[in-house]
Length: 440
Image (cartoon, rainbow, N blue to C red; front, side):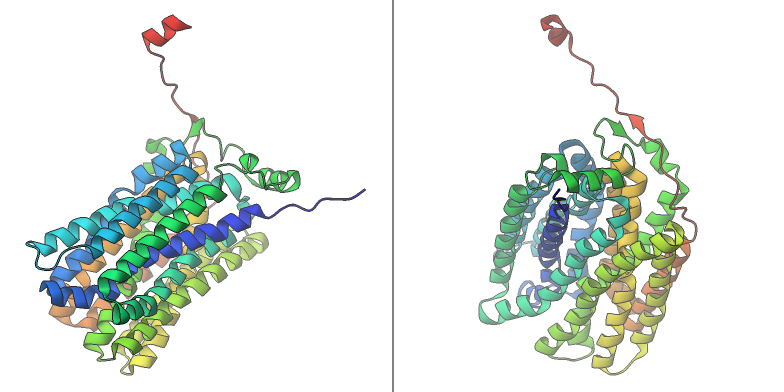
């Protein structure tokens, strides 16, 4: 009797989510590369440019919970595809801001804020999909691959955007990014389904493997985790606080590192784009590595060590490396040490999202959005505060502040119990209208 092997459709879709995330981060980081030219053309100083940088994570943060609710309610397939269309439109509009426009600062701020609003559905939707499709024991690896797309898209941005700007102009670089966003969003809608049972490519063996590895009730649409349970959970607040510090530290590299290297360290645009790529590439490699390591440690020592321990170790190492890199004199050495710091930060990435899926279950979209909102508030603060701190105390102080917060984030993981599940309840029934009842 021939035995059929499970198909691996879930991993194909994991890779496609990573690619979609890479394009979404290309849309975020492109401004940090083009920011110097935009600031010159529209006469913006660094604090004003910081406000523009901060607009995206602010919009992104505010819509995390609604984005997660949409994914929980309407499914990650449709919500993520529509999000791709939204962020393609506002990326294109960033490149369409006309020269000489009155109130350029307000216009750029508004467009980037609305871009953040659209991209807010990206990772709550992906984590809702993970809850439906990925067995608990594989969630570290799956999220590690998904968030490797963050580093890949961010690392690709400096050389790609710099090349397009050099040959065509900064506006064309945004229009190129918009086209990529439309393409990956359309492909996601065509390839994906909300549940593995709805996908023609999933055979019976893969479906059984998925179902047997998912905790009871996680993917059920008629269950939910009440907000009173989420907001009263010490574990949720510990993870969210830690992710706030994570977001603060990482956004320095997305928003300011290229400008720091080219204007403070005095390196050329070409060399600066290469040096900026190193920390972002490290994010990609170590995100995937951290996910596989986290799952392996979970299998050997349990989830407290595999999720909390690996995450705390990564953030602690990153705090030390970030402080060391800030005091180094050679720009190449700074880039290498900062790359090691970014890699260490991203060792912890999959733990946040794997635990959000485990804890939240049928409300994992909303819970992921809440936790990610913490990171994006941190990102918005660093986008605005980094140049202010640098102006007042020097750039070294900006990096020291991020290092101190990472140490706090590592400590916050020690308060989390990854084995506690949040209470599930049936969703309240929607009462039928009297008119509808009369027809029955």
